[in-house]
Image (tube, rainbow, N blue to C red):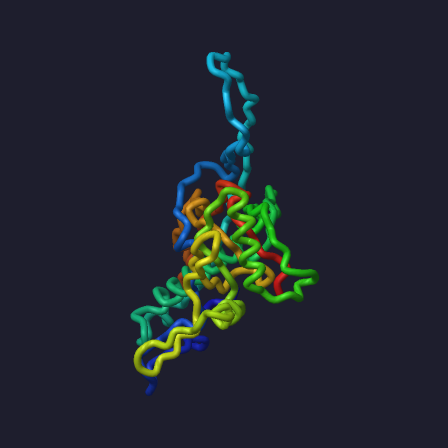
Length: 294
């Protein structure tokens, strides 16, 4: 791997503004919404249980108790996944004066931490990924969130159909019929305009705020089956929209992200960021995925 030198460095002091901004967005809604829990093994299990369907329940006075047949909980198994980033900075690059940061190492470290969070978000909702056990030569992978949602509403075939309000309502009804109470509608940024257009339906008007601001967005959708907060996720797979209850999900940590300074082998420092993480959905039937979107 090539060493980062001052010849490659952008931001050496010149007649420019002393400001640096991250070009790439790094918001990670799932990691913000899901609570985190510690796991103690690279493969871990958890149990999923459900209530029996409602039934006619009327007993004869004085009758003996009738024992019901009990059903076992479903055991789910999940893997952890190792996420890593490495970078190398020359001693000179750290020593020269630069705009917007004290040292190049600190700047690069902050960038890599943001990038690894984006990678983690993508591993959860950006791919349909089944668990991979891993070997000495193949990376271990966790089951993605998308593969932990067993209830789907198909928007169409061949990923050619756009999101519609009718599909959202069908997903809401499906979740309600299943006995779940989702409160978050997660969509890709490209579907935000479609959701904003829901307000153009008959009898509903866009809000015009005071002054010269036109509000053409929906951040809370009230349906017959519940209220859904609309959340945009840049890492969400483009063919999907998710109706979820974030309290039913967890991010899982076997090893928190840490930086290690690797052995020095010249006029530079080598840094390695690594963490071992996963995610779990405590009830696969609780959420609904709208699939097949354009």
